[in-house]
Image (cartoon, rainbow, N blue to C red; front, side, top):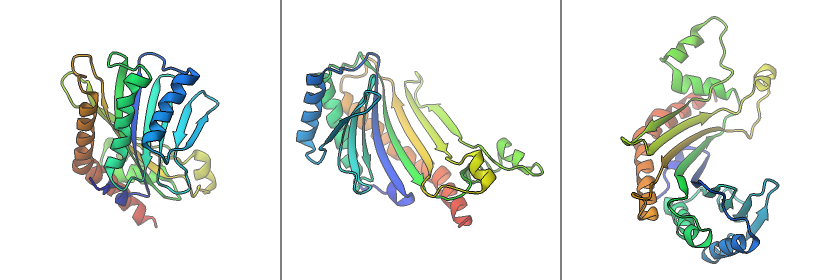
Length: 250
């Protein structure tokens, strides 16, 4: 599917996150073998590093906004694709990670705590992010009524919500909008140019050994659900109001 979501924002990422019950392997041979297999399948991913916190990272060159990466942490395996032209570019990387992890890292369905698909949208705005978010998403609500107080000014607004999408609560959706404006920015009226407003939309699934027979097929279903909700709910009720509020201030 063509990535139409990127046309609504300044930066767009699609990420996978596998949270595990047990610690993931950190032995040299295991880690290198896992990332070597990924590099064979994605030859452009050539930069391998270990960060101070112990995270292992394999990524493409970041000379442009478009790149892919995979990271291995203590109890989390993640993969992401920034600015994909097709959503399948991200999904194919994610599915390769899901396919390799049982054989290369010993991660079984019993060990998987949860699996996330996250769409991240960044909106450039040099100004008070909190005011934009409050106007776009809280107008007409109980929270928005507080802005009617004399002299009131929004200095902190990072709304989020988690919903269950199944009776057993094992399929969930989370949406969060994050401001990067600080009180010091507002007080001095000096706003950073490179800090965007970020919107995160995640579909999380808590698999069980009885419903995880085909982890890749289940993940693909998560992706389809995430896309559907992005079109039906997130774009019209979150993204468009944010874009309108930003446009009114420019």
